[in-house]
Image 1 (cartoon, rainbow, N blue to C red):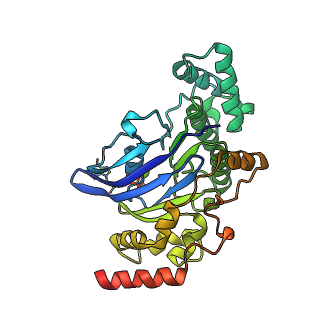
Image 2: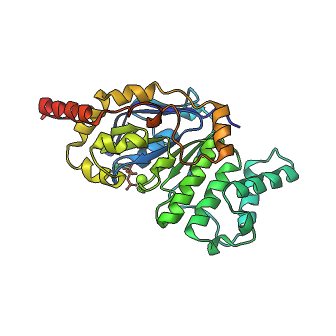
Image 3: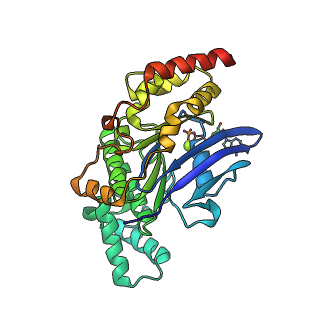
Length: 310
Ligand SMILES: Nc1ncnc2c1ncn2[C@@H]1O[C@H](COP(=O)(O)OP(=O)(O)OP(=O)(O)O)[C@@H](O)[C@H]1O
Ligand SMILES: [Mg+2]
């Protein structure tokens, strides 16, 4: 069980090619949290991922992993949008080569055990002898996840791992990510799919590089004044991106999310044991008290902020 895996971005501004891509982006994830990274195409999701991986330096602000600047911290597991798997190898061969490279200090038997363990975690134990080229899209994604799990990274970032999957497979993949979070991994998953958000503890919504929302999925629809998750993207068009950014900065939700408690390791282990896949983090669960956002109050404050800026 990992006890590490906190990730934070503070007031990050990123510019590239004369474009101001990320604007004062701040958020943090605690060990064992699963966060969906949402936003329209071009909103800055992949750029934010690059910042977290240390591949893009913010002009101002910082990204930290367990308190250290990301470029000085340990490796973060990363599953890119396009897998880089050798299709002529079987699942077992691909994992064996990856383990040989990444787990050089382990004895052969221990390496083999680790391969078996990650295959079990992603549900591929029955596919070990199948060539990767013959796997379905979802199975291939699971091989990519298994490759990253070999080194047991405390933090795993996945860029659109469910794109191109049918809704059933998408839900299964999100269930897998939730199970990994319940085992102690911290996960950030960029996605356009909105059907399985209740599996996540948190959602980060970007719009043109502004944080439009960072909070639990249970409060998302009330915050945006819509009825279904899927309507959030349409709703984003109703106001200018900077207005959404200002609204979130001024929202009481921001303070509530910052003040949330970490999920205790024992509680996560219990959740994993009981298969509490759809249970929100207790620190953020609306059932634990009243809904953290009063939608009427939030909308009133939002309208006032628009009146004063537009
Ligand atoms: N190196 C660059 N130079 C100039 N503009 C860039 C560069 N990299 C990204 N951008 C721009 O920054 C914006 C955000 O890009 P990014 O790839 O982060 O978006 P995204 O949210 O991941 O989109 P998608 O959902 O389509 O993957 C886009 O408008 C993109 O054109
Ligand atoms: Mg992207």
